[in-house]
Structure formats: structure tokens, C-alpha cells
Length: 485
Ligand SMILES: Nc1nc2c(ncn2[C@@H]2O[C@H](COP(=O)(O)OP(=O)(O)OP(=O)(O)O)[C@@H](O)[C@H]2O)c(=O)[nH]1
Ligand SMILES: [Mg+2]
Image (tube, rainbow, N blue to C red; front, side):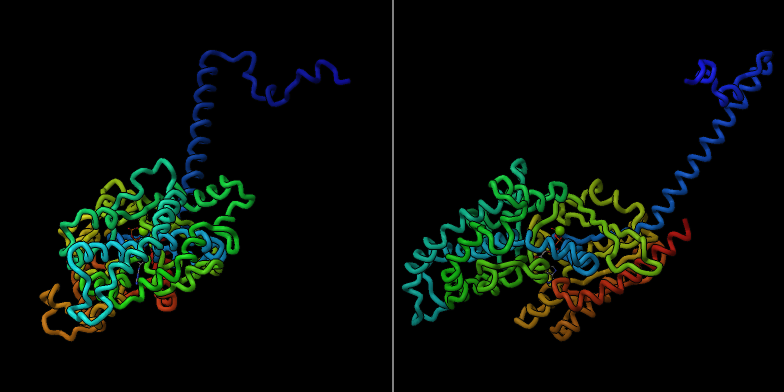
């Protein structure tokens, strides 16, 4: 058993103990020395912490996605996920089924509402050609509408599934609009009321998690089973049972003619799946990569996606990427939302959907989409906080621009300065590129290189190559900035 003396004795205490005969002045000197030693130790700790933070900063690449609503920011983010964290992307694909179902249901409602307004106002004809099945159509339409009525219930069900219960405003934001499309319908409030609703989710509410939870709440054993292929999914069952009627509606010549007359080009709407009906309404449907890129879910707030490239190698290994995706509608662009992310960003991908030259903003129907993009680009180029940030411009939705021009829409009608140039994709995209490049040159506070790409970010093949070039450029810029730190 240790002696009492051994337990009480602490050699460290003994060594640090003030000498028994310490004078007052020696006592004061000793206290001052101890305080100085504490200060030095604190300074070393602080410097080590700062060094660690700097190191951390050096290993984080920050990329910000900017552009107006529906410009393709979230789609570009999903592309990054698909390319650089393919396993995680593949695992989450199945969760997009509900979004795609909702996109489809909304397209069907667009058609039905467009038809009901025609019917109220005048008997349906097919462009003045009275010989067609026009006169019988209203009655057939009524039957079709009746048979498609369960889709309303499905829509409510899907919204409840995607949006958390306390998110009242989650369906109250406006949807896509084309100038000519809405000119003729502006006064019809009933038609507008539903079309001006777009489902959005806040990244912070993690809708993917909400989906998983909702299936648990239904008493099912597996968290993702509501969306697991082969399992029971009420929305999918209803869509499957309505598929013939949906096809009849979408493929009807008179319906197409009415949509054409109303200048409702559904194919150009975000979240368009009517051309994939057979596949998307099948009971075993699981979204593929293209479907996930085509699905539309508006962003409200800010979402940050962090990842280390799964195939990271060499100088990139250990580098964490943080891609920030913001909501692009006007209410989302307030300083408080966007500007905090300008701070230590390495590069910005700015998306300008050049197909929007004949469309107005969903949130402000007095503003042309192209004009809005140009003004936003000017503001980003001239922003002093971003003076040393590389700007990458995606002139996006080139596929839609191409289709529009091929369909005979004349660019010069909306963009006078385009004048009598050939009305084709190549000429138009070159023209826009030179305009955006001139703004970049003129408004950048310091000279910087212009990176401009014509993109269709829903196209997996072409976008993969472009994102690889962007990735290399961003890494170079990041290394340059790190050296300056
Ligand atoms: N055809 C085509 N569709 C595109 C293209 N880029 C994006 N889309 C579609 O346009 C819709 C809107 O894209 P998002 O990526 O959600 O737009 P966003 O910029 O994130 O919009 P907010 O979240 O409202 O700010 C989606 O349905 C996309 O699939 C493109 O180049 N071509
Ligand atoms: Mg978005």
C-alpha cells in the first residue's frame, strides 16, 4: 500500500512551486514571466489554427452557379454530380420519380386548361378546316377530362409528398411563360391561376429526406420503398391506368392545333415528358440520367453541394469542391441571398438561356428574359467583389433556340440588331457570344479572360466535355489564388 507521503507528493507541483523565501519584487517578476509565457503560447495556438484554416481553404474549390430562374443552374449542378460522384447520383435517381410524375401531371393540366378555354369561347375547329373531327370534339373532350380527373388527386398527393407540411407558399410561385402565349390569355384569371403555380422546395428542407420519411410514415419497412422500382406507388399506378387517355390527348391533331394557335410550345417547357409517355407511365419506371437532368424543380434559397471527385488524382486529390446553387427568380436575387457567396469563390458559371429571347419572366411579365439575362450578366461582370473571379458563361438552351429558329420564329423580330443575318443557330449563337463577350470586356473592373460556351446542359455528351474544361480551368484558377494567399 503506498505511503501517505507518496500520494501527497507531486513532483511537477514541487518544481513549479515558488521558492519559500520569495520577496515581493521576485513574486511580481515571476507573475509577469508567467503571463508572458501564457501570451506566447496563446499566439502559437492562434497561428497554428490560422495555418490550419488556410490549409483547409487552399484545399477547397468554390464554384458558384448564377443566372435567372430556369436558366439551368440546378441542372448543371446535377451534371457535376453525375460526372464526379456517379455512385451517389445513381443512388438518388429513383427519388426523382415523384418530381417527374408531377412534371407530367402539370403538362397534362396545361393542355386541358388550354382546351377548356377554347371550348368556352368558340366551337373547336382545326384551323378553319371544318371537315375534321372538330364538331364532335367537345363531347369527347368531356369524357377524356372525366377519365383524367384522378390526376388532380395525384397532383395534390405529389405536392404533399415533396413539400413539407409547414411550407404553405411552396406552390405559389409562377411558372414558365412565353410572350405570345400569355398575351392572348392574360385576362382569363381561371386559366392563369393554376398555371402560375410552380412547386419548389427549399434545399434546407431536404425534400429527398422528406420523401424517404413519408414512406416510413406509411408504415412501410424500407425508407425508400415508395419509390423503389417494383413497389407500390399510387401516383405511378394512376398514371399507368390513365396512359391511353393521356396519349390520346397528346397525340390528337385538334389538340395540337389548338396548342399551336395558342403558341403553347409544351416541348420547350421545363419538365417536359409527354414524348416519353410509354416509358414514364410504365409500372416499373425508374428515371434514367437524362430524365433526372430534364426534371424541373425550382430552387428557393441556396444549396451547397460538397464533394471530392470520386476519381480524384494527382494534384486534385484531397481537394474538396463546393458548388453553390442559388434560386434565380427575382425575389431570390436580393443581396442577402447571393452576395455572401461572392466572398471567396474561385469561379462562377453564369447561365444565360438564349432561347428566352421571345419569353417574359415568370415572376415579372413585363420583363423580357433575354434582356434580364443581359442586365444580370452586366451586374456580375462589373461587381467589384468579383473582380478577381473567373467568369464562365454558358449560353444555354441552344437546343431550344435551334428548334425555335427552325420552326420559323425570327430572332430579328425580338432582337432588332440581329437584322437580316441568317436565322440559324450558328449565326445566332455567335452573335450572342460576341455581345456577351463585349459586355465582359467593357464592364470587368480588371482585364480577365472570357470563357464562353454554347450549351444545352440537358445533353449529357456535349456537356461532359465542357464541364471537364471548366473543371481544369477552375483548378488552375484555384491554384493561382492559393499562391496569392
Ligand atoms: N431543353 C433544355 N432544357 C434545359 C436546358 N437547361 C435546363 N433545362 C431545363 O430547364 C428547366 C429549368 O432548369 P433548372 O436547372 O431547374 O433552372 P434553375 O436555373 O436552377 O432555376 P431556379 O431554380 O428557378 O433558379 C429544367 O427542367 C431543365 O431540365 C437546356 O439546355 N435545354
Ligand atoms: Mg434551381
